[in-house]
Image (cartoon, one colour):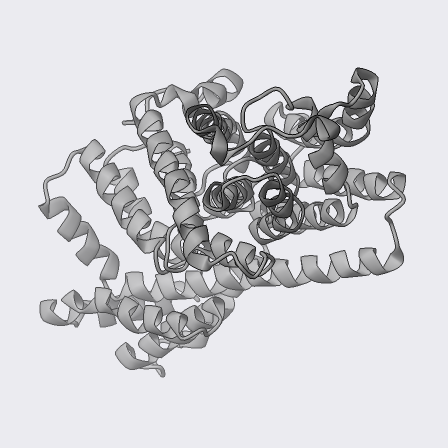
Length: 470
């Protein structure tokens, strides 16, 4: 859209009365209603944005479709999004390399002396596999098929077992190379490289809290997580080493290589993602699981997921542009400023809102619709957008673990035995949701957990308030 067209839209905005402008935040009501009906999010955003623009503006003076074309072009030429298809392709290939069974078995026998060994092995496998794929549905489903029956067969509590798989499967949202962090970086104008560095320790802090919780429950109440029989754990040491060398270390080496290239500046995220995709292909071939059909399936799934991400950004950009031109941003900003909150109070308010949004909505809706609304206020309060993004990434874990949507629970229910109810799965997830909240509090109190590594590697300020936006 040309500058004169933008000027026409702004003149039209100026003609609105204050009462009309105060109604602009209500644009979200029909949008959320349409999304809850099950319509695709991206096209719901585009339809609502174009529809509201037609309603409020004179189409002959301010061509709405020019806005659509411009925003589509901006998204399709956004270099920050280039790693998305490559990381997705890497994840789908790793998923089809069929190494999860070996990985789970090797960690299980290596952790045999730890209380709740099977649950700890499940969490460790989830963390590593989620890091390699970043696809929550795939990790929860595969671990639900592999680890869930094994835990139930060993006498583990149904609720504890379900919570372990659902919480562990969601770690890929936070631990790099997270697709969510790339999307946030593109939205907030923050370097994905620095986001990856910042998310590294908070991600493993959360995984560590999960493991400590499981071990603590197993010590206090051994009946929840009985010890494995000697027949399953009596494995010679050299065999354990061989299992780790042929399952854990190859995947760990691939992940460390990709993340190391990114974090230490040896390659751009796009280049590192390409290396990761090639490494995943080599792994699939080495394990003898590579076929043309699996390659074709991975390409199709990657194209589908990438198209979804790009169209989400297009729809979000159109809706946000119209919402901003109609004065919605100003109304929200004035409302928040009228509360007379400080930076800490604002952060708490936003995180509570995002937590509540996680009940009916998934993380994609939260990132592309609501986070952009808060970003101007983040700048106003002088909050480092990288630190804000880390808190959002932690918080969004709850969108998978908090009913009634809680997609992780539904993924697991789809592959669970018939006697396992959705209420048992939801009950098992709740303690882990509270652990997410605890991890957020820890990050609030000790922000260096997330800011130290970006500071050490890139000289980014340690202060989370009054820090530059770049």
